[in-house]
Image (cartoon, rainbow, N blue to C red; front, top):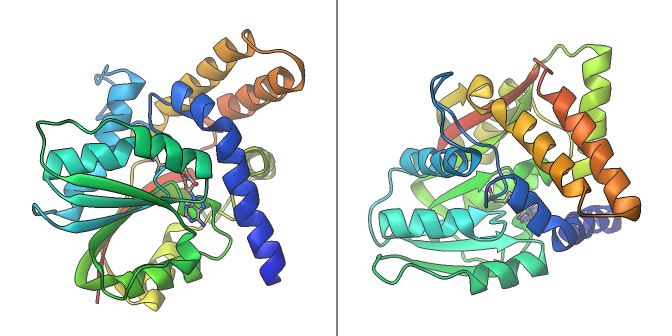
Length: 276
Ligand SMILES: C[S@@+](CC[C@H](N)C(=O)[O-])C[C@H]1O[C@@H](n2cnc3c(N)ncnc32)[C@H](O)[C@@H]1O
């Protein structure tokens, strides 16, 4: 891939989020990632399940107050505010969407809580930050958009100090995928501008190669599965408020997401790694 093609991809992802961040956040309960349910008896609504997922990511970072934390692909800033306010840390969020930077900067921060947030437009594969300038980093469903995951992991290894934790929450794919499932996944990748989805082993290998030790890698696909159905429902409700091409696109997306919920080889990983 040429540099121009890589830049086009990043610009395309940014443009998608400039246009659709509000819609995605509305159907996903405020942030833009899956929810986490402890089991069948866990009846919390999607917004609470989504906050639960953010909380699990932060827990894995083992933060201490005052630390500098990087949120890679920060969306509208909701996870960053939650992490900063819950743990008294300074979270710097980066995103490739200028609209998201504006939204995140406008997001109110709870006055009675310690911690701080700041947001900037930046590409994770070309981070502007100094070497070893962060105590930890997390990436919730942002690596999925990156064609060059090795470049992003290399940049993260550079800006994290030795001993710093990196937590990734993202999709993975089993090595064996049937033809029908592969078609559905290809459709989902096209709709949401998702790059190739790695296997669990592939994540481990790439992290090690970038200079990380993998402490834990847990597949939580069953804990997040309810999200697909709820997002499809959300899209269908929104279709009624729109017209024209966007309504048709959204209805098509709802059908794909509905079916994605039944795609068994689509996994979801929580990974904790340490910068060597
Ligand atoms: C699915 S959203 C997740 C947002 C947020 N992490 C959350 O959980 O709500 C994906 C995010 O990754 C960001 N992203 C995608 N490619 C990126 C890149 N190369 N560098 C930085 N951010 C990127 C997008 O701009 C968007 O904010």
